[in-house]
Length: 549
Image (cartoon, rainbow, N blue to C red; front, side, top):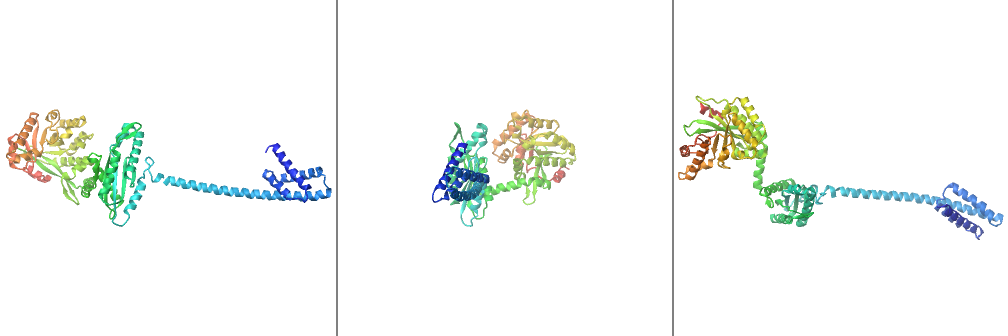
């Protein structure tokens, strides 16, 4: 309040009091009113009240023409009313302020609680939903799936496990920003296509659709086809046509006897099947196939422990000269004495070892064991047979192969010329120079290099001209045809292979020789050696030693 405003207020209140002193009867409510206005104008201290009473008494007594006895009584009563009203107004204002504070505190508390609830709610559209696509995330999906299979009745449930094909190329080609927008657009299409079913993003470019209360496989297949159709059209992002396809793994079954983990594992396996055939389609869960693959995975996982426990061992099969019947060498063939499945042959586990990379560890053991056993073989006359060991592609391409083989020969004492390493055609037909350089270094040491199963791959004899190969082992598919007397085509092919190999100073061993007739025909076309049941089945090392002696 400015000085002028304050003077105007006080003049008005003074006039009210003067008027009240003259009036008949005396209206004490005027005193209350004056007090209320003073307090309302924040003239509310004790000093202000005392000064007000003092000024009013002096001025009104001096300025008003009233009887002295009467004015004192009226003044006292009026000023008492002012003081009483002043005290009441202060009290009321204090109570009002306290109430305002209380109300403000309640309001602040309510607002804080509301803000907390909103924050908790936001923490929960963050804990259960994917921030990029706004789809339910893995957490919410897991809750819904668990609830769907928790019922104890004959209801059925289905899953479509969906993964975008080669989506990394989209990110690599257009950048992650456009990739994210394409992913968001794909998620919107997917959600619209499969409504009212729950669709969730599990992470990356993987999604899953939950089909609750399915009536059969057809329901879930229809959902998968709708999802694939929705994603088949290109997505336009910043003027770019981004093509997205997907693969879907489908599993559908009764809820009784299953669990969320079983369903997700089965759907994941089925998605892998859909991917392996090229993508852009769906695959349906097959319990028998899944059982076979699980058994393979269990077998693969048991290989390292089997090596540690000494469950693997070697048999040896003779490589016999077709000229005089002498045993030129033996091929080391690994076996696995599995504690539960019995003795397993290589076709049961070598492929698994190659897929998982365990072939390096297993192949290294085979090579070391073969060299260790072969070094003790002695012949009654002449040179003892060499030992032939298969090397996998991963072993050939592994840095340090030459150093490892050299160290092994030094450790065992096996002469280099009594070791033959067998490799596949595909290993040699590589554009990488490093494996070829390693084989040349091994050949320079005197180690024999053979091409195994020749004829099943590239069969490029011209390419072999520049490689450090000493022997070709012709695949048994060609030899098998020699069992029929009229099978002249296989005989002519073999004759050509033998002739060309000899022109390159290579010896030829025929695999899979099972009959004397096959051996005779091979001898007639000039084949150098044979391997197969006709010359001896795979046998332990002590049998080989007995045969040598």
